[in-house]
Length: 187
Image 1 (cartoon, rainbow, N blue to C red):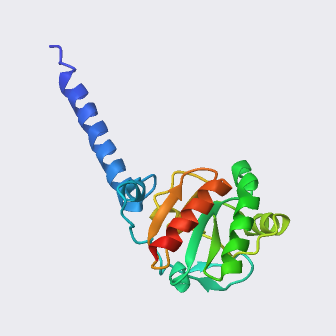
Image 2: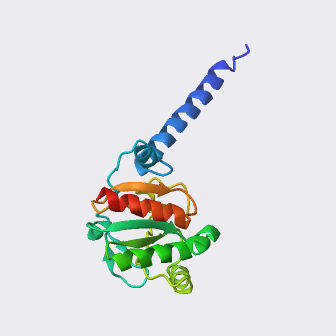
């Protein structure tokens, strides 16, 4: 008596669909690769910055900082790593933006490292003369909260801590100038 292979195929297909569903739910819960912030900003909304109260250690010492500490200021949150070539190219743009925000006294750039050794992060920040705070995200919690796909990725927050613009990729001066102006106008 020959058995049909149809029940086995159905079982395999059902298992694959369940696995795909579980994967999608996990991704949605962690925020990895989520474009929810992007869509809200595209609709003209200003969603609250995720994980504002999450403490992250500074790359320089054990000081813990939270994005909520910068409420009342325009904040440019930039995710980067020392091994990232586009991150190296955008470093001068971030420094110029930091200088502008400092000169006007109304904001800061905050770097957040991604999958980077602390020593390598410190060396990169020193080589690129970063004058802005840079935080480590050892468990990728902040990275995931922003729904990041990779690096570099940059989010511009207004003085109420809402996302007014973002870039999923290397930023240029024109983007940052417009996004910071938008954040200032929103506040």
